[in-house]
Amino acid sequence: MNATALTTPLCRHAGIEVPLLCGAMYPCSNPELVAAVSAAGGMGVVQPISLAYVHGHDLRAGLRLIRSLTSKPIGFNAVVEKSSRIYEDRMRRWVDTALGEGVRFFVTALGNPRWVVERVHAAGGFVYHDVTTRAWAERALEGGVDGLIAVNRDAGGHAGGLGAERLIAELAPLGKPVVCAGGVGDAPAFVRALGLGYAGVQLGTRFIATTECRAHADYKRAIVSAHANDIVLTERISGVPVAVIDTPYVRRMGLRAGWLARRLLRHPRAKHYMRMLYSLRSIWQLKRASLEGAGYRDYFQAGRSVEGIHGIEPAGDIVQRFAAAAAHELVVNSMPARGAVN
Image (cartoon, rainbow, N blue to C red):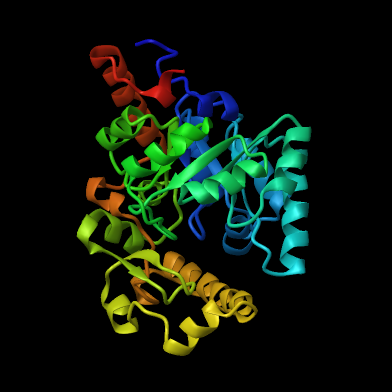
């Protein structure tokens, strides 16, 4: 096997061997999962709210715990939406703490990433930003980001509206590395994404169904049992569509926000307060559902990648299997992966 076969711009920016990220997940990004993906050659991305408020770690102590489990690089997720001054100040402190603890790869989302970029570039690091369209990508590039996480319509959580092929066609001409997020649950899908020209892949749902993830066994079994057509979009979590597994609780709750909530979410001033209200409620509900399982509510975020997930296994095994499949494809069939070999 050619040791450099999987070297991509993402690998060089993140300092990793396999172009594969374990996406930051609330509430599922526990330290052991983050560390296991990084130790295997990919990169686990820390979700600070999950680390602090679900898994009970002070950020600095949590980062040091991960460091005790692996010396390989880890990433950090900074959601930069302007929701409240208290949140913004906390995120700025968290970013500074992560930099102080040696993190040099950051994934930003939802707002203007410029202040994160300035801090991270000053420390010699790199920033990628979540996007769903070319318009949002262009805004992120104005903020100075080094790469893009292309969230497609098959992703879990807040999915995009475009397919993986359409997104890479729109974003590749911008000249920055693009990472595929959504729809990848098995090794063949990973290989296909690299073949489309992506510089890497970000997985979320696949890594919930692992031995290291602290999600409840009910959640993991629901992912293994589900098919792509079992994934539905609900507005009842955050006010905008979120991908979840269709369960009896989701059906009872309904998929659409109430008429008053929809109206307030469109109001120029009220929408920020409504999003904050939804976020506070969903943080509590998702935390309990993830840790307590169906005994609380069968309320499980997941993407259409469930179609390719058939068992609960160690995270490192997933990383190594995906890497081996992609390297084999490159060597045997000369896979034309623009993002994977430049």
